[in-house]
Image (tube, rainbow, N blue to C red; front, side):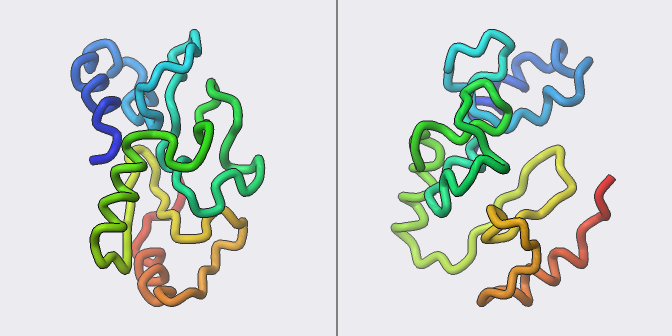
Length: 135
């Protein structure tokens, strides 16, 4: 689990949150960036280094936006931890599952072409065929 502080927050405040189902799928960590509406934090999915800040589609420079990517790649301790762990191992494939979405985002998802044809294309095709259609 990467976003442990948001998980802890949701667990501790579940009685207040369950009235709003979207609150239980919080993607951003709990780092306080002074957003008055509670949307503070960094979307950890968008804080990794590859093609960070590729364009303004899919991530934001604005801290109060839901898809805020942080001030720089790996600016958050959570993403630095995953990077450091991957660098210490012989990793050939990394998968991340997110709650609340029926999507699988494969490598190079920063680009609008969803037909990945890289070295693991067989694997991503198999996963894609098993996914539920978008709701």
